[in-house]
Amino acid sequence: MNDQSIFYLLYGLPLAIPLILFLIKRSKHQKVSKATFHETVLSGLTEPPTLHPVFDPNICFGSGACVKACPEKAIGIIDGKGVLISPAHCIGHGACASACPVGAIKLVFGTETRGVDIPQVKPNFETNVPGIFIAGELGGMGLIRKAVEQGRQAMEAILKRGRSKTPHDVVIIGAGPAGISATLTAKHHNLRSVTLEQEDTFGGTTLHYPRGKLVMTAPMKLPIIGKINIREISKESLMKIWQDVVTKADIKINFGERMEKIERKGDTFTVVTNRASYLTHSVLLSIGRRGTPRKLDVPGEDQKKVVYRLLDPEQYRGKHVLVVGGGDAALEAAVSISREPGTTVTLSYRSNAFSRVKPKNRQLTEEASHSGRLSVLLESTVKEIRAASVLLDQKGTSIDLPNEAVIVCAGGILPTPLLQEIGIEIQTRHGSGAYPQIKKPASR
Image 1 (spheres, rainbow, N blue to C red):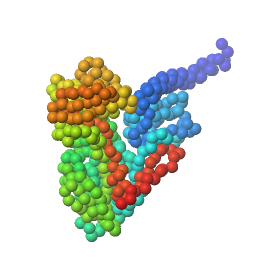
Image 2 (image 1 turned 180 degrees about the horizontal axis):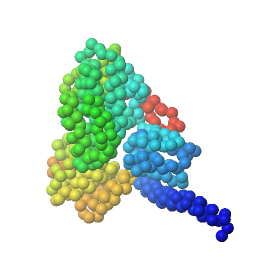
Image 3 (image 1 turned 135 degrees about the vertical axis):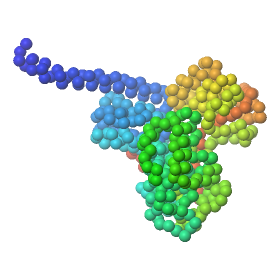
Image 4 (image 1 turned 30 degrees about the horizontal axis):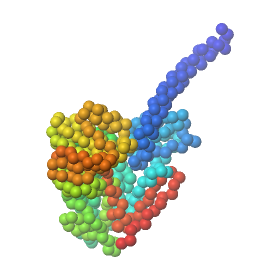
């Protein structure tokens, strides 16, 4: 063995071993990423629901920093480039973009094939209608921490508008994370405010989650309260935090009061609810994108046994239950209720397959069906809801089932018409490289 060979062995081998191990590890990660992405495509879950990353392949060199930063494990590396391998899991965290060492990630709304309607807002969260502001999920930001920050910033922008002679400086509509943060900020600055929430408790979209569902978030800082250090938390624990915040800060929220319309006269607004009217200088809309639940529009739907969200599976123990819908919410509800002793659960869906659901939910549904705990009726629709039964139609065949409870998980109707009635312009975002298409407000 000559001196040159000895040199390579002594100095080259120690350098080569870490590189070889890195390449082996990277190869394994890429195989997992490809398998996950393949499953995503087969499941039809290729469209992200909210703000999401787009990778520039000309800049990305596959460092993997974005993969480590993503709290939902929605990003992978394929062929040496970053890829959103689980779009349906993305919550718009944005940590991936911050972690990228070369700035190869851009956060966008919508895709080329699926536009997302977003109200037009300025950097200070004011809409094209002077005096009306939007913060939180309605503006496309579903992440709790960012909604909290937007609520604070929007209220500080409202403060800069100055006070007025109206009874209220601002009316805050919605008591989710953005609304609570805005309410705290208003109190901190001694603004004359009133906060309205159509539900009987606070929490925003989280309120509609099933019992025990884990919520992903990040440490957040609330006005008056200070920093709250949470990352993964159950729905119930998060609700308890909001309750403690409201109690500690001594803020008032008008629960069960639904905003019905907003009338503008000059530089003032009248917010009309199901209980009262409020004259104000500014309005902050911190409502969710869920809007009002989409109904079936069938006879008998007005009965008390019909609800549009699952709060506690245990309350249906020993009952005959019908769940309507084919999305993740419907499958999760049906599976969780089917685990309750003595419960008979039927899942009705109008299509012939569950095409846009998470693989785990599809698997759990199949397991529940095979075990006999859950009856799945595809290509079926509800025709009538009776006092003790439900009438369904499945490909021309009538099915009459005993029934004591109906849970409709058919999504919600976005509040776009309401916004347009107020005069707020809506932008349809189609991701990077696409110009917003502005929908003009409806004629008044």
